[in-house]
Image 1 (cartoon, rainbow, N blue to C red):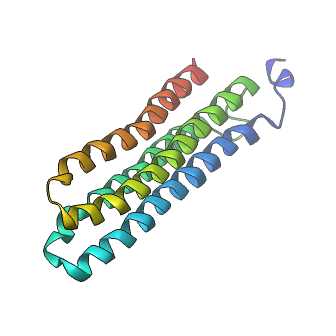
Image 2 (spheres, rainbow, N blue to C red):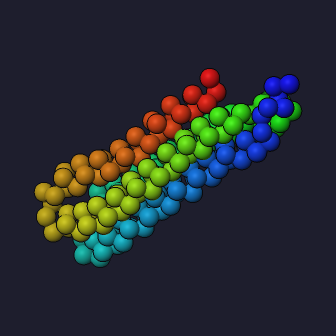
Length: 161
């Protein structure tokens, strides 16, 4: 009787959470990598010795995609084919909100990391004292994605209990 009350379309929202987490999170990571990579290429032309320290924004952008991957795997782990597990509409919406949380914060963080990384490494090429400030700003941008991951983890645990 309980399975009759559960709508058949409920897993659609959970799958949407997986898709939104990966799509938006990876767009943010790709933008951050591409935008800061442009700055690194410009720095490498004039000061090749600074390339390794200038890769920090690229690494931080890649971490955003890992956040999205973690949530996507956790959401997918909660989903089973219909005969095995009843998947409620509440769980579907919680998984959708978890995916959107990590995905959209990853998009925002990737955008910030890309812009700061591009201009930061260019400024670092001309003035080495800017490096600590650049790294601090990059950390504050990265933590936006981490906040989204934390909220998504909380939402994911609420969907199963």
